[in-house]
Amino acid sequence: MMRLLLTLALASTAILPAQADQALATAKSCMACHTIDSKRVGPAFKEVANKYRDDKGAVDRLALKIRQGGAGAWGPVAMPANAQVNEADAKKLAAWVLSLK
Image 1 (cartoon, helix red, strand yellow):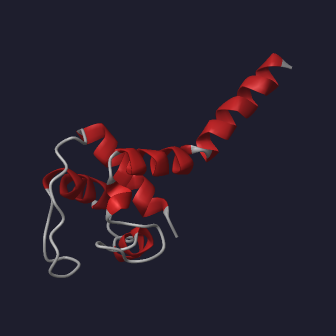
Image 2: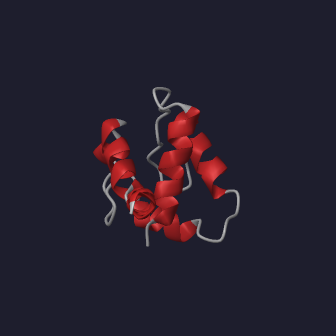
């Protein structure tokens, strides 16, 4: 019984990361310029996921953009650097964005 409960607990944590990462996106101020479904200042996260869905190196590429900023990929408004986001959190955010459909 204990083994079953542990297995269920671990399985449920595998389902929750999307919510945890939206909380991280909010905490790191990503949601000030982005939304999940529609363009705000920057593109919707679902648009980003669609654009990079076949790109095997997208997590690393997007994590770098999150930290260093970027310009030109989505129009004239540049994305500022987010130095307060460490590399691990940037990769977590990038993976979450890419998981959206």
